[in-house]
Length: 136
Image (cartoon, rainbow, N blue to C red):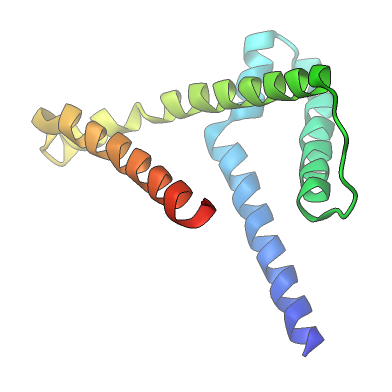
């Protein structure tokens, strides 16, 4: 029985890892960050930061040892989260340029604002549903 569970865990890890790499690749966060900061020669540093971040996230998710953090540590942690979310939002903004072209191609460009608001409100409703029903 434990072999099946191990196989399912391995397959799940490979699927999530592949999705994460595809996500970073499609959005082009690392190349865009290198381009904006003019630091193309530091590619290895970016790669190591992503890899170490993934391993640290795995440790935080599955580790048994709590990490004690001071207020200054929490401020730095929040700053790093803010930087990540800001870069993710910037990358998604560039990807969202696809929507106007797609809507024009399928002939619903008059409803662009309505369709984008439906996406935004659907995301908000889904997030609220998850937090109110499942997290509470």
